[in-house]
Image (cartoon, rainbow, N blue to C red; front, side, top):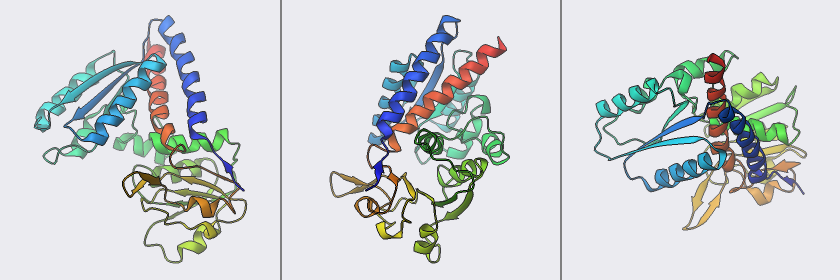
Length: 284
């Protein structure tokens, strides 16, 4: 049976390290600051923002929350971002998505200073990642990489199959694996003979957003499975993109849903904010 990769435990360890490093910075007169902007009343977004606020408080990071009404204009939101870009107390800016329909998400994300883009979504930071010289790496795929590292998975020379091609997870995690000298295949819902592609993988990273699409008997014996998917089935049940019970038979190690990749996303947001604050401290 597969080893269960405990994302909660790995995230907790990294958060303790972040807290310790933050205390060192604060003693030097620099308190890491994260601005979080929420527009509207989306229930899931409100819960996520609340989790970020609590995580910041636990780590000793200054959290600057801006909760705006849904009717906020695009111009007013862009003005707020410009103010936060200029605020020396703020090391990271996160605009919670989705935004209301009348606001252009691309325009808003592009307005964030690349030096404060702790989500890693600005085209500048995407380009830096693609050319192998990242400034900030997107939080969820970065969390995947930290989980593999802390689980002792060496990607050098391994066959990695990424199922999913989103700008948020699939594409960036493929680039990160390439940087670790893996041979990477990107698949998606329209890939021909997907079971054969998955069966060739030493490491499977599932981020396609379809409940239990990847069957357990597709997994090569001894493979490591990282399931990024979070899909609601029925009223309460959450499942990943991988048939967890089926994959347990063949996989050497696998992340559960929930309790796998999920806790790592906010953890890496804190990590990126701390890195940004360290850069500010180094500049004096």
